[in-house]
Structures are given as C-alpha cells and as structure tokens.
Length: 188
Image (tube, rainbow, N blue to C red; front, side):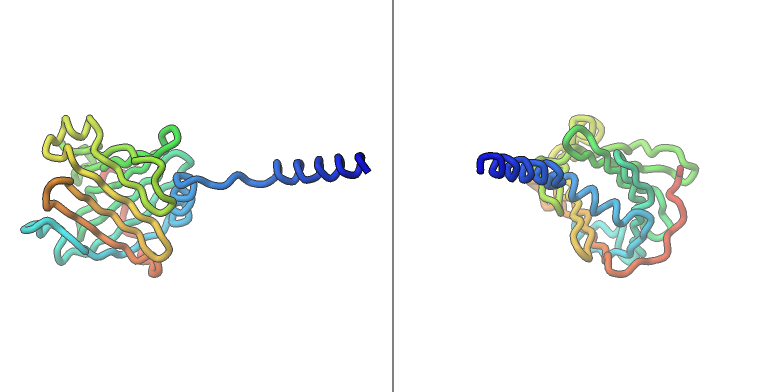
C-alpha cells in the first residue's frame, strides 16, 4: 500500500511540474500585443486638452509593426504625419514605454525618447507609465505625466494624464476591424 501511495504522489508531482506557470500581468500584456503584430487599426480621439486641435479631423491609425521578445514598435499616424512611434521594451520584470519622434527626413526630433517604466504589478490589460527622470529633464512640464496603454478584447487605448492638471488625452482603436497598413513611419 505504501508503494502505491508513493507512486501516486510521484505521479502527481511529475504532472504538476509539467504544468505551464501562470502568466503574470506583463507576460499576458506582452502576448496580447504580439497577437496584434503586423496589423493596423483605425482610432478615434476620445479626449484632448482644451484648445488642442492637433488630432481633430485627422485619420488616426496605429500599426503594431514589429515585434521581438524584447521590443514592440507601434507607429501612430495622424493624417499624413508619420512622425510618432510608441516603443514598448521589456526591462527586467517590467515594461518601458518611450515615444520615438522623427522628422520627415528620418532625423530625431528635439523632443523624443520620452516616457517611463510601468508601475508594477500592473494589470494584464493595462499598464501606467509615469514620466521618468530623463523625460522630466527634457520636458519639465511633463513631470507628472502618466501614459496608459490598454489592450483588451476589441480595443486598444493610448492615454495621457498630466496629474494635478486638466491635461488629458485619449485615443481608442477598434481592434475588431483591421485597416490597410500605413506606410513605414519616418526614419524606419
């Protein structure tokens, strides 16, 4: 009887060790983004700062253009303007968001590579990225910026809140309807 009990225990332990570990929020978030790789989606402006008409009336298209185990690049086109790319990078146990801004000739804009590291643990569908020290040094007014990226069934959201102010920005993309992939972003 002891041999049967010990054998069953070993079998149960062997089965448990073969199970896949449960994915944490970062792994789930990353996998959901990777499933979008190569696809493009149209968006709509949901909220903008008072008086800011930069995105009003423009076609808004994002494309999860390139994916690797450590980096996902998402160009964001505003009409004919192909200057913006959101860059998500795996760093340690977390994720970093940076904004790569380019001129039409491919050169970097004076204000580029700003963003920050995700607040952890985060949620499988949403991460908030407060401004990092490099961003604050480059753009002092952005010291309280928090960018948010949400990836959930049928919807991708990019948002900005400047905490302590009325500065709010939010674009939502419909993941249920792919659009034609736009041209490459400037500089790529």
